[in-house]
Image (cartoon, rainbow, N blue to C red; front, top):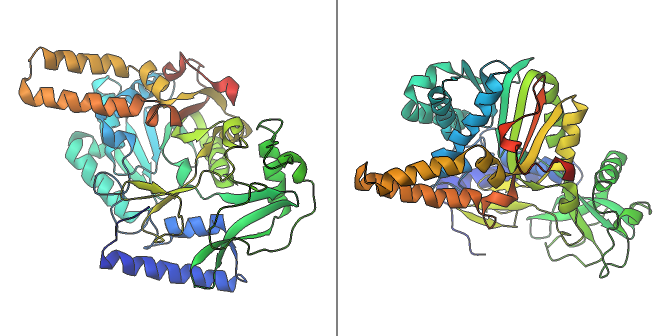
Length: 428
């Protein structure tokens, strides 16, 4: 894929980050795990994708999130949060608030529903994003800015509603590869041209145990006729030595199966879940159940990069200037919630969740008003744009099916509005 060229200032930042990572690889003996690489390119202070100064969200950034597409998303979320406010404190804790548009929309919508948030806590690691969030809320919901507070760390105890929209996909993952010789960890080395490249290493016992436990939720028979072996059985074979095969990024032979395991995402859910004293946790992201995630045909994993609204697979391109993500294994997230003592309140597609929370009713009201000519030509145009955005949020070919919504609770009734129809928790 042909990708746009960044400006000179951005290139300077990317080269500085690349040098730091290369030095780290040299100090670690020529190899680091992909989770370490992903952490550096996303969160290196001042240089990482989420900690550096470059614009990330919206039309001028690299991707558009659901709250950026339409205010309907925040309004639907408010319906669910408002229901939970009847059973817990009227407090929202948002992790990774992006541009701040979701916070602004949610604060306004909760106020309109008559259930305003008494406090809105944002936990954000990026100083530049904090400032942008503050500006966005001040512009779009100035009357609500007074209840917003930014935190550096997780509160010791949470009574309220925790929100994470497109959060888990940006948490570093370990990459593994299975063949007839056993299980390998896939990491990053420097090739002969001085560029970052894939390289394999013997897997440690912690990774072996985690992969075995994870694949127990995937299809019972992971046999692929073109591969000619069972992936489950191959993990019992002898472990291979360090290897630098395919460091040029070429395609893998059909006998090898590669994927990721999101141990940091699971740990985050457990940690936050234990801090949740009474309330709910709602997570929205793209991903699958384990049976879909680790399907034999998905043998190259889910890692992708986002750069200037282009999705591609070269995760080593321009470190620090592009987002690097992996899809979410929601079966593992459900287990992490259970390990923290939380109740699973629902799991479904974004499309079904939005419809359950009243998106179609809101959309119908907007279009009816526009068709009646009650608000003029400008309102008609806005309504048309809203319909287009709603189509993106709901369509199976776009965000509607790929994105999933999962909710946990402690001390709440199992009657969440977003899951009254189409709940798929039985598939996890």
